[in-house]
Length: 339
Image (cartoon, rainbow, N blue to C red; front, side):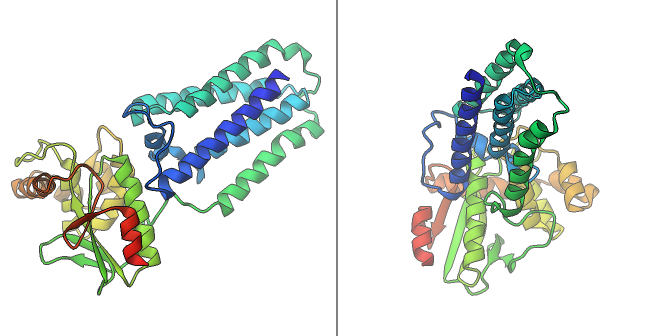
């Protein structure tokens, strides 16, 4: 009964995490109850590129795993121990990702990890009481068929709310440059022009940019998005001393792939410590030599520093920052302008 209760608790926690995962992308004004600091922030974990595996959010994977464990416990199957051990190993791997790759912990995630560890301990202690063998076809069908069917349904029918157009294909909207040279995307004759100031290392900017692109999909003839940069770190006026992600975007722009690079940099730069320019060149089929030479140019370092200074001069409090007609607005105000 203790194993069944823990498996049910794991399912419940996983579903709450899935709710928080969806809300992190779809509800920009919502504050998660488990976001209590920079290093203890479930939203940062939810917005990381590690939160989706094989087209399905990780919390749903957790719910499917705990469902299999619950059914195995009901059938007293010998599969209970290896399934519990697999859940514990997965928890250790996810904890390492949180600590090393994301740099933040998620309280509810740690609750799921503790449930996994408790399950494997109890399964080991109760292993002598298992009555269903590994080859029991009835138990096998009951344990694995529902999670497999639910995974297929999730992969096919759950909307990819965490994804917008990616860096692998072409740009699905009209695009160009403003008279000042800033890249724009969207309506050629817009009724609303949004200057979106972001930082490629900011996980919240990644989510905000995804929401902006969804708005663009809903209002392709009304909204134009102008990409602006407001990095949280200082941008020196010399190359190789910071703001490399901005300069990577500028250099990709010179090879005609700014918006693909924009998506790639959010995907690989948000929350990351180091981003390899060679990987950008490889994934976007850029000329690696030209990219390397471009990143060394002083004029692009000066351009990045000048762009970053604009947000400081205007007193922006952080990123993302939305500006329409020279006025800082919220995302809810933006939605009101587009109605």
